[in-house]
Amino acid sequence: MPNCYTIIRVKFDQWFAAQAEAAGVELFCGVTVREVIRKDGRICGIKTSDGDELEARVVLACDGANSLLAQKAGFIDELKPVEVALGAKEVIALDAKVIEDRFQLNPGEGSAMELFGSVTMGMLGYAFIYTNKDSISLGVGCRLSDYQAKGLRPSDHLELVKQHPFIKKMISGGKTLEYSSHLIPEGGYKSMPPLYADGFLVAGDAAQMTNPPYREGSNMAMTAGRLAGETVIEAKKKGDFSAATLSVYAAKLKASYVLSDMEDIKDLEEAVASVPDFLQAYPKLACDLAHLRFAADGVPKRQHLKDAIKRVRAHGLLRIAKDLWPLRKVAI
Amino acid sequence: MKPEPKVDMTVEAKLGTLEWKKAPESHISLRDSSPQAPCVAKCQDKPCAAVCPAKVYEWEAAHQKIVVNYENCIECGACRMLCPYDNIICDWPIGGMGVKYKYG
Image 1 (cartoon, rainbow over the protein chains, first blue to last red):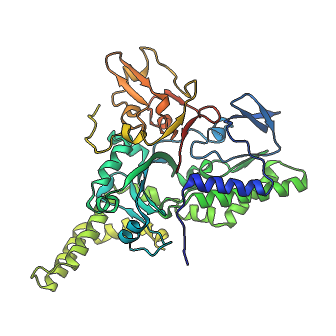
Image 2 (cartoon, rainbow over the protein chains, first blue to last red):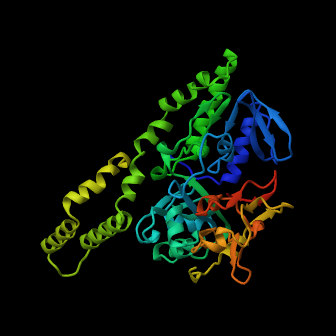
Image 3 (cartoon, rainbow over the protein chains, first blue to last red):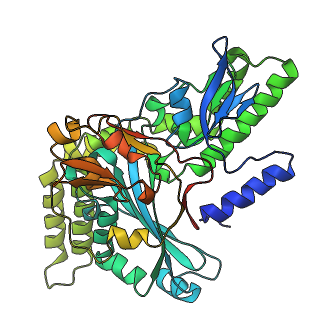
């Protein structure tokens, strides 16, 4: 049984929107929401880029990482460069057969992997590669403040990643179909805006709902959207759209995996970032140990073991324990 | 400012894989674009020009100003946070305009 899927967002989003329409939702595409409108201090609708006003009993801001709506409504401040990751990605065309061979897959199976270590050049982040049916997605994502400090363009970083011998083989002969770039809110639990107010709810990236170590976000947004919908249905039954009634949304999120997972990883990024060479030193140590483990170099194994212990000790056992302790939350 | 690294596929070539529906007006503006703007007087590193993944921002040394190629924008929004002087206003393009991803 598959335990997760890769999707092409443009296709998936259109399919998903069609499901919502089939359930009775009315979609207005091709308009940009500029701001919320208020009556007596209370949010009561939105204003579009065409100047039209749409009244609503509840406005649900799910306008992504750049939630200008939540910002303009005064619920969040502008994000800081340490709170977001900037990702750059390419979708690279390859024959399904070639992908299956390279990634050792049966037809219909897929593969996803992350690359930590030298590929991020000391920045907080990782490179990723995942297979689609007849293409692969290759990308990098690092903390925006790290790109800022390095003065490195993510598109150029992606080119450097492509030079890695492992990646080079995986994408060989592929043609880039599309380049894209996106912000990922990674401030997490501590950076979340208030989730509800009178006539207002926030969901998805707009509310920082991502789980970077598990590559999750879209699923959390969909769950939050459903819970927000259920909350509004209950509010409508009561005929009350006040913050007190809409607070049920936060309770529902707390009872779901969305907020419990976010709570579990709330200190993780900070802990990793507090050890400057974490993402360099530990991947290197793992590689060094694996190299020793598989070395057939005429050296007795007991010497390899001594070397291995020496390398680990060089880091300091206490320091390793302290550094790795926060990772226990993402061990499974 | 640092020189651009040598790469196989430049950002311009990558942008060549994309399509846009061009908006008649820019959705990006600088709060201060005068000769006294922080871009000219204070900002040494110009992270907008160095990091923007679509090369929307370019420092024109000859004219001592930041040029905004809003048509290139792929709407990541990073520039708002990148600018150390909070000098960039980047809203969404008007409805239906801007970058058109085929895969996303």
